[in-house]
Length: 52
Image 1 (tube, helix red, strand yellow):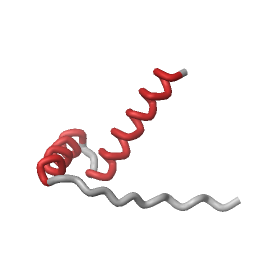
Image 2 (cartoon, helix red, strand yellow):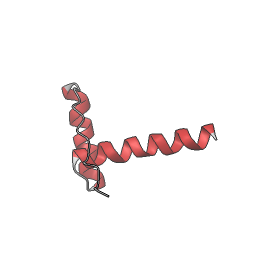
Image 3 (cartoon, one colour):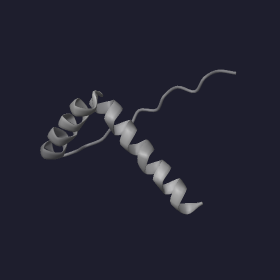
Image 4 (tube, rainbow, N blue to C red):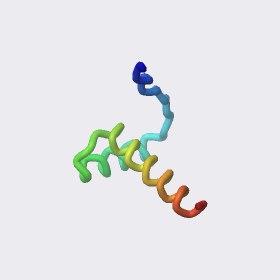
């Protein structure tokens, strides 16, 4: 069985949001990509807990 490749997601965000995301990522010791994945996973986890 072959491992499915990671998906690519292009995202357009304004400069202010990017700057704040970068600051948050640096504070948490993550890359911006890592921070976005973390936040998405947290939102999914919260959604699943609230809807089950």
